[in-house]
Amino acid sequence: MVTAPVGVSGAVFLLPVQLSLFSVPSPAVTPTNLLFNVVAGPGALWRYRRNGILGDPLARRLVTGTLPGVVVGAVIRVFAVPGPAVFRLLIALFLLPLGLWLCARTLFPARRRRTAPEPPPHTLTLLALVVGAVGGVYGIGGGSLLGPILVGRGLPVQRVAPAALAATFTTSVVGAAAFAGLSLMSSADVAPDWPLGLACGTGGLIGGYLGARLQPHLPETALRLLLGTLAAALGTLYAAQTL
Image (tube, rainbow, N blue to C red; front, side, top):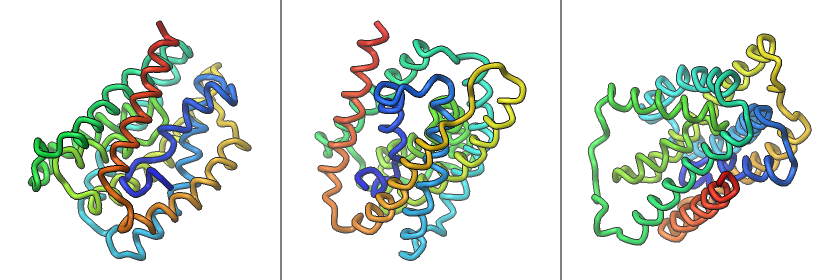
């Protein structure tokens, strides 16, 4: 409910909880997180569609780039970085700078451009491809990275949020399928924790719908600062544990 208004999947904050609290083994935690996105995504998307803001061409461009990227990320996740220590370091390297960046953009709004042109299609597709690969490794689908990046460039949250969540949902479907196929070729435990993924996804389904519905009434500055603070705190925690 908190993250959907800005186009960020709640999976970005659930993943450390799955690792530390529920002890989901690595790399199975990644497809479990993708399963959450598959179940939870339609809640916010349905609400955004009812509001008539889901048909933006930006959503199609993000999906086009992130779909192949998430498959590459799944391969890297299974065969290159299956160990929990490396995975915790990746979490820290992603969350800490992202959180600090979001906080800086919130606390110093004068440095943010009021309006910004949309990146050229080829640049946007390449960015989505890279982000999709990172999202495939991390288990967040990719849209959770694209949303903060595009909003930080000056694009309005009302436009970016549904497009980023659409990219997260579609890439999570493809990523989950990729992990299912890779499980046949790898001895690692890459099957999702179905009860946990479905239970969390059901909560995300309801929360995402409520977050999308409340978006016009939520203070954007406070929400961005909250997201940045949470991300930076989680990144710092996992960096300390890795060291």
